[in-house]
Every structure is written in C-alpha cells, then in structure tokens.
Length: 83
Image (cartoon, rainbow, N blue to C red; front, side, top):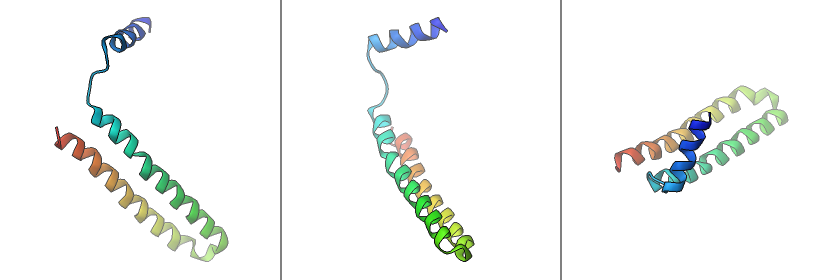
C-alpha cells in the first residue's frame, strides 16, 4: 500500500502527464448526468400523478436515457479517434 502511495506522490511531484482532453470529457459528462437525473425525477413525478400511465412513461424514459447515453458515448469515442 505504501509503495502505491509513493508512486502516486512521485508522479504528482514530477508533473501531471496525460491528455487534457480527458479532463474536458470528464467535465462534459456532467451534462448528461444532470439531464438523466431530471428526466428520471420527472418520470417518477408523472407516475405518482397518473399511475395508469406508468408503463408508457417508463418506456419513454428508458428511450430518453438511451439516447442521452449514446451522445455521451459518442463524445467518449471521439476522444480516442481525435488522438
């Protein structure tokens, strides 16, 4: 365990290496996360208001989450293609 920590501290002392684009992608992944959170919250709210539409709302929510995740994954793949 101490060897691992020494490696990390030594790497930080030598300077940060790697691509700055990874930081950019990490920050851009916050958007879809917030969007999915809002979408799920509104779906639960809709299901509480009209329980008879729960199945339709859930299906629409799952499709929306899938499309949002695809956009995030395209950005992640684009990160590696750009290199």
